[in-house]
Amino acid sequence: GEVFAICGSCSALGNWNPQVAVVLQTDDRQLWKATVELPRGVPVRYRYFKGYFLEPKTIDGPCEVIVHTWETHLQPRSITPLENEITIDDGYFGIRNGIETVDAGWLTCQTEIRLRLHYSEKPPVVISKKKFKTSRFRVKLTLEGLEEDEDDEEGQEKTSPTVPQKMANTVEFSLISNNEYKCRHSQPDCGYALQPDRWLEYTIQTMEPDNLELIFDFFEEDLGEKVVQGDALPGHVGSACLLSSTIAELGNPRKTIGKVRVDYIIIKPIQGYTCDMKASYAKYWKPRTTLDVGHRGAGNSTTTAKLAKVQENTIASLRNAASHGAAYVEFDVHLSKDHVPIVYHDLTCCMAMKK
Image (cartoon, rainbow, N blue to C red; front, side, top):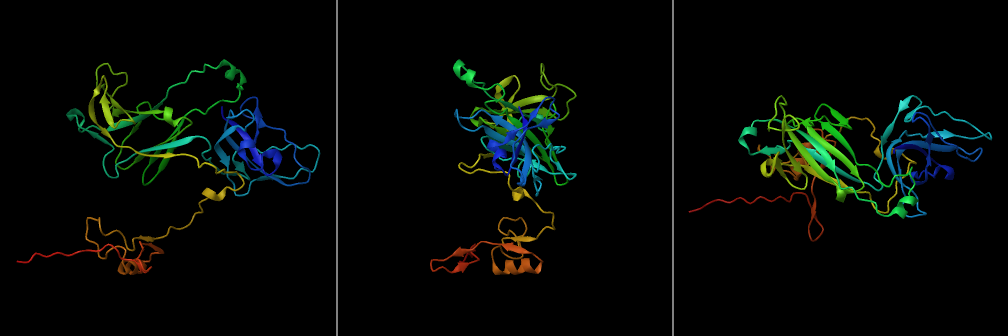
């Protein structure tokens, strides 16, 4: 399962590499501790993190480490051993000098899948069946996968009972609107409601993306009565597998009642690139005032419903953005064959009919 570990600036603590960090031990899951030999008189900096230590791929290889959460204070914890034996009580995980600063880890051997349901362009759910035309829906995500049987008994004997072979699939649910952001690690029995002013995002981490099936279950917003007779859950309308964009009616999987539109992105770790815990400011966001940046000069003019005052990617649009106080402008630049920069490239051809 998930454990705490320590990673630091000396070889005994892994030289900031979490793959060879020191795992803390516990008896009651409340107090975690470890005994480490450190060089005397040499300052040592270190951080704690929480994650999974998985079985190595090779016999002599290092453990696969998945960093779930780690301490990200700009200045890590430090100690300078001056005695033969010293005991340090570092308090609580993530809290240093009364300030709590932790952040999510990075991808090491797992794959992250992000799904998003939103009303930005079109409704995420389009129902063709008349009795559900005016219904509002809730959606619940379920992860399913095939369990592989372990037939190699000799291989099982070599596996340590305390070191798992793979990480269990994890899901985070994010509710995003203009005014607030909520992140949950669980969902209601009937899922979350689909609202025009709110995005619903799922973040899934798995070690077997090819052996993962994502199923959406749809419920009517009014859960007072059952929609289908014999329904196990009140209000259950149907379900949809991510591999298929159709929603099948409960009890009649071949009959569809609508379609679901899902935005997705699949993220995998960069091969050959290793992250460490020496610096934590890669994701550090310093609070500051926002900047006004002119997109395509003074804004998009080709696909807007209203007629724009100036055309995009022109000198006039750059001047217009500057006159409105823009700190920066973004615009397209083309180069001609003789290497002359051309700012305006969206040419317009005016045609007129003559007798």
